[in-house]
Image (tube, protein in one colour):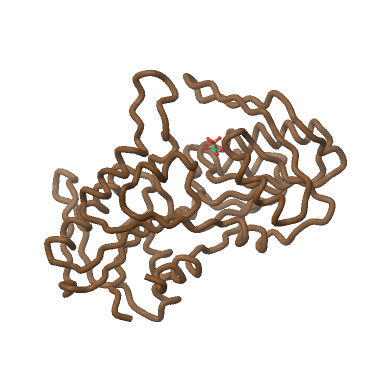
Length: 298
Ligand code: R5P
């Protein structure tokens, strides 16, 4: 392969999976921290005139992983790489895609500017939080959707109902339901913008006596999944399957899931999950084949 594949420090396992799919090795890059914790990037590959792909999720600690990505982009440009592509499986900071309260910064917009300013020519990402994010980028962005992957991982349950967890996830859930030939019910979810507390107020449709499948983009604190599953159980749901692309699993989300009425959780490897956060009901599906496919087409 003529393309050089580099990995940041956020998800080297996924980067290696992609490399294996592409029958190549990860390129030589040294990423270290100065004594004051500032990041130092040193690219040891000969990249002049070449296409270079950098794999870096903006996962926790997102600030650090973002700066690291930008430094890699800047170094590659100064080494005269021909084309520099950022593969950002989880685009951290994308949840704040509008000013929810007057005075809040729109982080998704600024992050897009940082990535461009660092010199990246294009971005490949997975399941964006919302359609508001795309227009923030002036460089081409291709988005890989995960409904097919997660649908296959779950194996469709005849008689199940797809449940849209909130207004923001409506079109994602509808795509999943239509593609699976399953009916859909809609929840009315409210989040307190001060405390982050989630409440489920109502349901449009019925789940009584049915298995349910929830397909969300992110598991962050787990509040959406936990409140939703409790509400659905109270409304007569049988088994509950929770599918999500990005397993942020912030705070004690993993423990909450383990204790929840959810029967099975399937997530992808866009974010590296530390061993301590793995739990019995959790299984993983890799996005590596899709990312490798997108890189091959460059
Ligand atoms: C909401 O807009 C998103 O699609 C997810 O439902 C949300 O980000 C999940 O966050 P948490 O796990 O903290 O409820």
